[in-house]
Length: 438
Image (cartoon, rainbow, N blue to C red):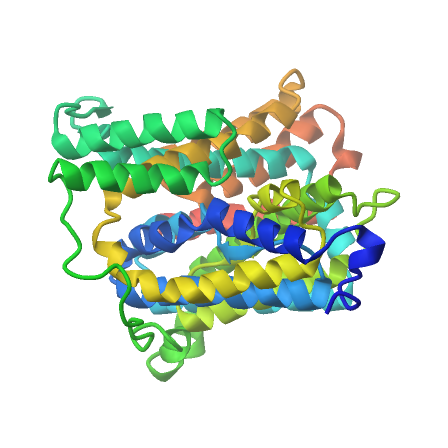
């Protein structure tokens, strides 16, 4: 095993790899409870979502460890799960089964792109400013959802939104959760988001704000039947033309876009911290991307939104992880976590809301990479970022940004710098808005 992962060459050992794998798991374990909470409004079974989340994370992470040999963990992505629920299912009225099919297809396209080797072509076609804007916009979007789930922000007929009743016990608990999580993160505590949820849940139970678990926190594994294979159920109910509408194709494109660039950015950032990047190139990049894209399709079959690489893997690398063996450890821990589904009753919306808000803060950091002094760049970036939370749709934000970018660049006389694909996408997204208006 140590020879397969080249322990001696990379200067590591079993102790460091195991510690790194455990650290990564603790840093991202919050997704086990946040993902079911985010996807629950679609009507999906929360127990099945929990199992699908754990299995998708375990399988994807183990594939990454064995094939790409990187200490990088995967799980259903934050932001993409919110897009799945609030934009696709609730916003567009697409059944969750069909939305899962969209995730599956995006994963298959990702696999094809990776195998054919046109990754660089696609990456270079999309301007960096729009990639950063999309990441930051998704951060604001999920933070907004977290603030709503916490009751900190509520609806208003006069102003659309306003501050909620902070004296409400559940809202007060969420506020406490935000503060304690921020304290943990500020102190540099690895797994601060996860520990913040634990402390918030305990405080909530002490003050009877959330219910106590009925029995042992360890129980039987919920059935996966309600979601397993549901992605293919539309084929038995509708014709292909009714399934693959322009609306769903835009959804698939959005899933693919966000997953592709989020994965590419995360892989590079994590690998760079570990010292794997040589001459600005990532060894075994194709294997890593293939592991990620495969995990997306597998996760969709199991019954969860897009599975992607997690930046929290850097915590494991900081603890000493350097090989895929650490990923095997993280994957096994996700399998063990299948037994802890009874805790779902304790981890309520108020407990998971701080995680959404803090992750949103971290993702908003991408704003610093945008050159706001260049108006032709600032306009499309601004529309991308602001439209996501205000229209409750990641797809709308991306569409507006992709429409505005070619327009501002042409007006600035920089039309030669715009990739031809961007002009094609301009037409596609204009047709998308025309379709929505019909």
